[in-house]
Length: 174
Image (cartoon, rainbow, N blue to C red; front, side, top):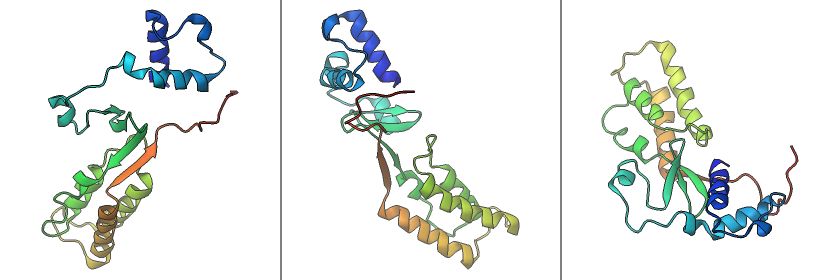
């Protein structure tokens, strides 16, 4: 929403997208389609990726919204579990590794909550047992933990559409 408002302000200020009589506040769908068609005029595509984008883990056609990668071409948000899976399975499964793996998933918007909650529940079962941080987990927790990690390997990326409004929507009443 912020980006669309920002685009509208820029379009009005620079008077280069369309004449005033062609701009309609009443039909948001038409306005959004026109903005999408002319988006490259406002923000030219980058031809090569910068070191900063690579450092934060985004591609040239991606930005981050609240720390979550946003693919501008497909208009999707995604959470990647690759960082979580890296190094967790090396050696014994400990309370420290569980805690590290669960908290390495940054998901401010709650996109991956259905996946992450399983790991958090398993961790909550360990806490009352008063295990030390580097003590190996008992089998009744280690087996479901390993299964959870293997399930995340099968689907290492959760992607959802950014827009929750359908394409056929023509009027919104608050």
